[in-house]
Image (cartoon, rainbow, N blue to C red; front, side, top):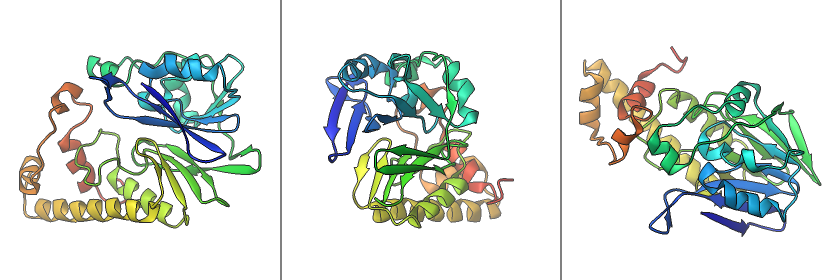
Length: 269
């Protein structure tokens, strides 16, 4: 599935998803500003993106992180398009890991691309300047792009999609996620361009709700650990039950990973 939704005269939201019963499983957003594309959506919508690109010139793509729902469309870009990413993401973009069947169904298997350039500290797009900012937490070295004068932040997955997150991948660092969101709160934003929810027009309240929830969950999990509770017992005490699809992820996501990350010290030990 593919939808093109202008946000204003400068920014276009490009929504990509896999259809199930004619409905999107989950939207993943890319954003176009002038000749720049921020992220490239999922592979299962790459053909639709290719059709869009035939009528819209994109010269540069800025990749926030190499998860398949954000880089799956890179392979249909014209050869002359320059792809920029954090150096730590380059190998995964050049050689995407083979996904399990569940994620191939949900997002699609990204194809290799030929070249990736290290992202510069800032990117000029007409009258706008996109400053690269560290948004680590969901993914190590995930980056976003801040237009300070406009109060725009293209935040990828820095802010959890659900307001009450309780599953995680092993590489997610919840303490770092909280720290990143607190830093986002200091940016005086007008619009948060989220990687899955689209433009958020009330970013302060949206982000703070998630900070408060995660801090409360972390305090509760640590208190239960001090009482001698195991991870399994903490999950039961906190009332977490896995969604229907959790087993299908074959260990890529779990409630245990979320609790274990909550229990790590702020120093990451």
